[in-house]
Image 1 (cartoon, rainbow, N blue to C red):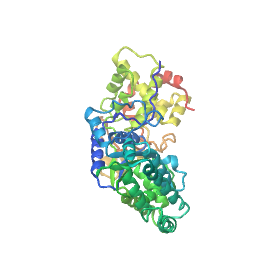
Image 2: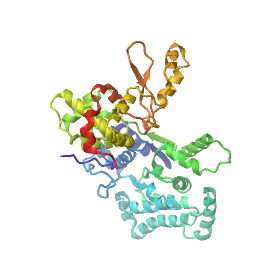
Image 3: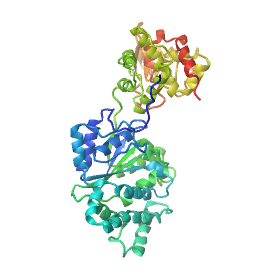
Length: 486
């Protein structure tokens, strides 16, 4: 019977050993002087949303599992006793807001959607409701309504072409239309006063706004939201935590910046990075999982299968160091493993674990290779030969060319035929390469791949280690039970 697939929802349970980073960022948020903007950087699939949800929970915020925004493995028992006690104390002075930016990327002025979401969530926040009950219903309705009024005012400027004109024309519009109804002469001042009154009566009280998935937005939407934060919400008591893939966001900003014609793309990238630095001055970067096999094993349900797989992998660096990809690989493992009988002998168990992992990896991450393999099972021998350094790819050709210019070892490398890589390899690269060696001893070393690069064929070292019993016929049952992808 197959196991239940793992979902891709964020979780409130720390499965990636983030406690130190979470504690440090909580303290930074508590101790910083608002306004302040923090960034949480991570490549896609690194767990940014889970990290931010766990951070929100530790700051006293609520993350419901009922609407599908958070995985159901969360609950009231999350965290240690000390963490729950600290959460209770923080919740008395910190109010959190969660905003999924990509849901509002079609808005002409995304900061308007953010203000409406702030109003909605503030109206239900326990610390705010407690404070408002002391102020009276009329004052409560006025303060909450003021956020919507500010949003409407900003919305008038939606069609204006750039930030400078938005700010200048916005100030003129305020003085002409809102001089009598607003207590200050700017939207920023108005928002500052409203937020101050809404928050608990505590000098350390602050509003922490989490902005998730900004890097999934279209470039114009991402840029407009950042401009809105800079112009309108750079106010006291406000702390923003932006989840982002830095490079993706820099690319988006680069598309929107007004730069003279003829400026080199590299210069545009530098200007975009500098723009992001001006807005987000404090970036926390999520570490990659230090032990991918262990995390993959944690998502496997059978202890015997887990042990056999970990024994077969040993110390090899042969799995993508990305939580989402590891979880997806665990799902495919569960799909394949139930279709073949589990042997009794330990050696046979390890051999089967390797075959299942290789098939699951190629099925999940390399559809084109999988379909070729299903169509012609003998294609596996070509894949294995490449993993073992017997088939040239772009990386090996470039490495040999570099070695050819250095000393005696270069002379040996220069004698190798420079073959054109097979077209099926495409942009794929091996995580390790063959090193110059003397005699019969074969040596391999790391190619130092980007841990988040999607073109790395991570499983290759495992194939090379177990090549002698990874032959085409051993995969017949796995190819038949899964079939080609659709």
